[in-house]
Length: 179
Image (cartoon, rainbow, N blue to C red; front, side):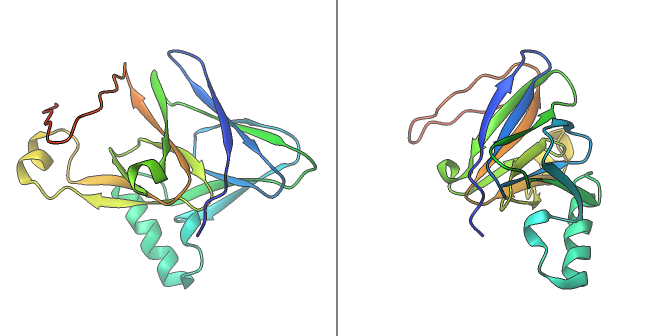
């Protein structure tokens, strides 16, 4: 599924929020509890399981909802669609101090793995699933556990990371070990 193309702006320093600009019929999906505000004309709908995977019948929906529970997320996601005239805005807030990071999935080969609870919101069409950490030592002692969140698709996704962030681009063959 081709993701909706959304425009955005991130506000704030320690407690950030992201404002998504929606064209008519455009949709953004978000975790329950991340909603901050929306313009009149934007309709909020609660969806069981992963919003991008709604055509798999009841068994598929149950499987997707079960995967969400494994990552510590709720059974439901929420979609926000602009049913009004002209551009409308919906905003989503970070749950604790840190930074909201925009991820343009095509720039990372359509897949991004992040820790549990990092996902904030994304363009409709981005799939939110699970990824298993296959390294025993990292799963046991790395602090993140064995189950991570996997964002896949061709649109924008927004994650939240606590604390201060530092971006470092590695050259070919360069290795960086992190805690």
